[in-house]
Image (cartoon, rainbow, N blue to C red):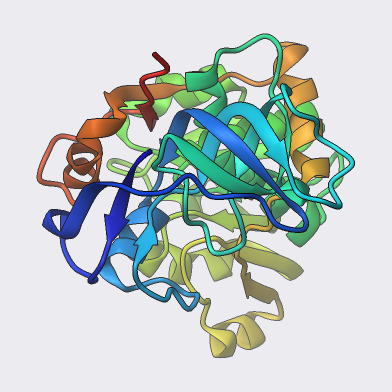
Length: 311
């Protein structure tokens, strides 16, 4: 099979499209015929050697995937051969930019029936990150208020929709040309961060979901109520600032599970979650996707997905 391999960390030029053996599933694993693979910034961090996790070389890039189960490991009861699935490969977030990939059975689920493989591959990491940030980390309930930074981004767009459905009041920040989109997703208040200050719209909120980091994160402490929570998916918050404002502040890494994926699939099939694929690129051109992430090519609005030739 063909796969995108990295033998040394570095820029997109280090990626090599190579022929490798089709792997065999071990305990807890399934072999998936990949029809589509999602592309995310974490793929670029791994390629460049900036992963938060150990990444021995060589490796195959990619984590988000959608496809069909071809074989299962000796102890796997579910899913079954022939099942259409989506999810991520493993806890190292590698292996999906390939015609076949091994995936942990505990990190995939049946694909939402109402969408195709391309759309399904765009969902797992970003949707589960939004879910866990709101409900597992911030533990928000109906009637509470959350400030979501980067609400027009891939994670933010799911966070706005999930919060709205859960009865959580949302204040969202977005660039001028994304304000209408975020409003359509269901945000109660949308702050154009290019012309307005979110501090003027947010007071004593229960939680901040930070998908931006930097100065935006630091400024966010002052809009939280005492005892509130700042949850970041991008960088470690300043614990001294958190203490001085009487709030909790946490950075988390997403933990994709079958349970979360099944919940999200149900919401997609019921029409409660809107998906936005930004651009679709053939697997053979995956280096182009990384050039987009590096800012060398113009980025799309929405998720980048690699389409695998299924002939």
